[in-house]
Image 1 (cartoon, rainbow over the protein chains, first blue to last red):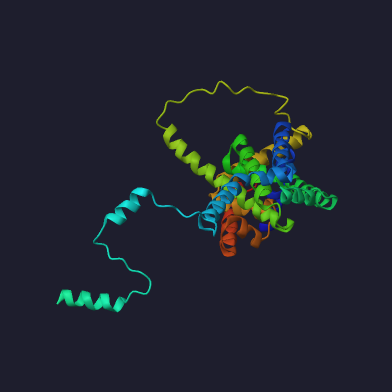
Image 2: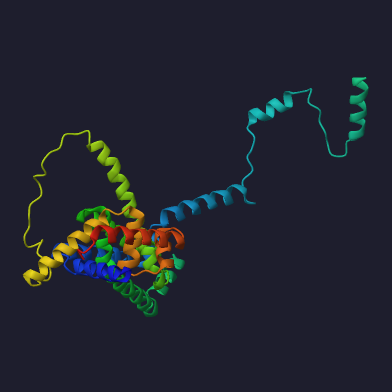
Length: 112
Length: 198
């Protein structure tokens, strides 16, 4: 009984599908062709949608390399900065070879 | 530029073009084999031909766009899963639209023109047989259209499209046990509704 109903409903639905009108069949064919047209696009066109993102990434990488690379130009201080530094007579001048332990002892003595 | 030219060269080789053509033909055959039943399933779910055609076209586009490279044995459950999701989305949107439209005054649709050529059936059975078939189709389609959505999906995918329980579960995004339950309940409802009609 159950199998009869299943079989009969399948047959009726198949019959209904076989009687689809011309307009519907035509639109289904158009839909299929439209979907398949996506495969017919040349490969370089399919890749081309990634070009903007790729170009932006390349520019970002280039900027990072130029900023942190060994040939990065040294930023020179302006003459105004030099004058300020020379005029500051209170600033201690530490040169290579100075006895840092002496300065630490002197600082402790002042604090006490 | 060199890399682009090389890539293009590879994809333009005869072997690659042959593979693309074969894949395209296989997909076309698959879509052609399912499109009518897919339309009927969408039509029963949406009760509107234009919406059903839109749903089928969307499912075709999505399958080709996202899953063309998958094995051909995966296409059917994937396609019906996309279609089922699309039908469900359209049903939900329609429910919301219906609630809004219920507040607006109704008007006659004057833009629809009857086109006898477009509406003509593709085959002509004898008048007596046609009447019998018309009655059976009308009764069955009404009964199926009135099934709860999940029962309707399970019934159409299993009985009409011929997916097995596992494929139906994959297409519906549920367990195999749920598919069996929905299918059984759908069958019981149809038996009670249709009686001796079909």
